[in-house]
Length: 375
Image (tube, rainbow, N blue to C red; front, side):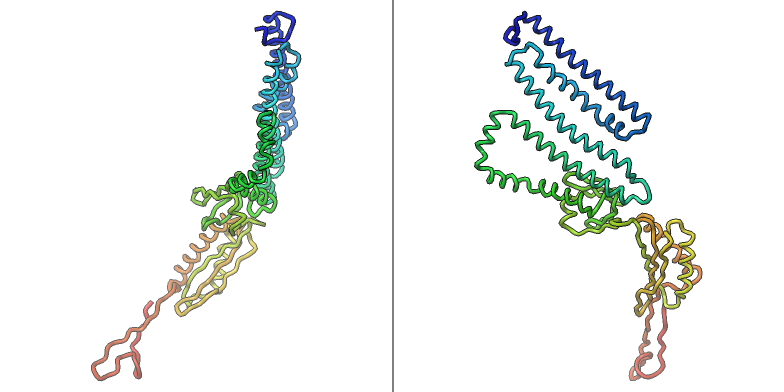
């Protein structure tokens, strides 16, 4: 046992001294951790501090490892351990502290996200700015996490002399290696670049209403490499992040959630348009889904059989616009059925009656026509 300790005292005394120093360091670090968490919890409860609440909620797991490891790294030089034991322990603790430091940076980005999310609430009527900030935070947090993990992994590998020498010997072929790695990681790199572009330019945000691949839905999640679109029937459409940079798509809430809704009807020429316009105004005035700015009814098309009437109204968002369109369509059809039952589109035609041999057929050529009109 004496080979494990570099001390003039007996091995058992050295072992007891080492165990006592390390145990005292761990216990002391846990006491410091408890005091800090207690203070932060009191501050969060008394002042409603979002920063303190986020630090307590997200830092509990990290602090269980950070404080003891930091205490061990400070206490190990004071123990009588021999260099053959001391050096591997210090190296292992150093690697652990690098991992925890990376974890701390990622946690700090989450705390910043919590603070800004609390300031900009999404569950309000006008949440455009909140969704903009939320999208930037989500995407940037993903990018920061990937970059921090890569940097931490590189630092850990550089702590091993053998790996560092191998890296030095491969420096001459770094160009070829970089080209191979770049080609192999092209999807990942393009997704990271697309994430940064989306965070800065924001062609879409969290909770935006979009039409992607012919599907109507809302942006539910923005991950590191893909986006989850919640379709109206609760299906989920998984789309690569780079899709929103490379392909066109519809965004119904890009600058505002306000939306125009159109209702199209084909009616007979006998329907009085002015009366139908008055009925539309009466319908929307009593409807809470109507925003109150746009209410227009126009004849937008006509052919040999019927005329096309379009009612145009506005709503606060796409969901309300859909419900308002359905309500207007039902009530306009009900109005036509009650007041103008003959106002539905008609199909007109003429039927000729075969004439005896040597005579002109009835309805064809000179002579009176017996054509009939059929609805």
